Length: 210
Image (cartoon, rainbow, N blue to C red; front, side, top):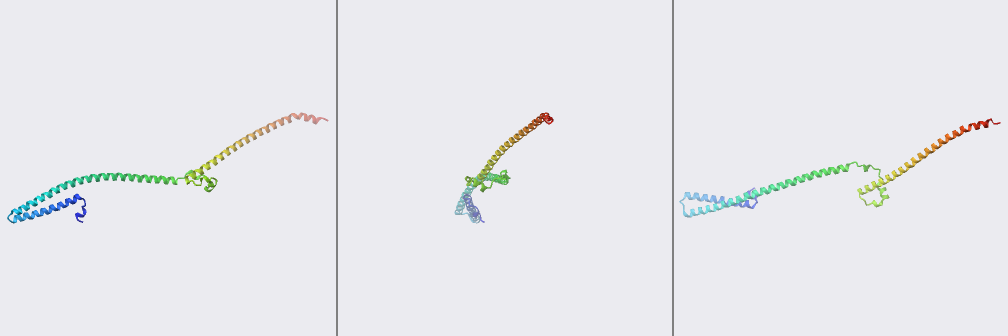
């Protein structure tokens, strides 16, 4: 591939063109110099040599200016490239951090999804049965429906606990009543035994009577 097809920057293209022009001028000047050595110098030949020298110096001067411009442009391009690379490195690091955070969040989500939540072990009534009892929750999403079912189960358990407490109080009251009656019966037995003991002399008198 030729240089003309590789280089597409205007300043460098100008450098190549002026360089080719200076090379051609230098070759032409060398040919004239060889001709001047072989033949007697003529004023016309010397004038042409002086003209070519002038053009060559002009081309070399242009090359120096273009070379200086190209060097400055190269330094500016290098600085711009360095700054752009730093920005790319910064963005790449940010992207890597985002990938790391994404993987971390995906791991946390997977852990949460696979976690054996206690509410999943609750003996909740089936969804259809719950919706039949509470049709106002028919349009709830899965999360709201689960919360409503848990609240329903909690209310049921609180009602059952209240009933249990009431039954426990009744049981304790019945136990206390039974104990009191048992104590009353025990006292009655004692009183009856005392009465029988006290009545024995009277019974003996009746037995001795003719």
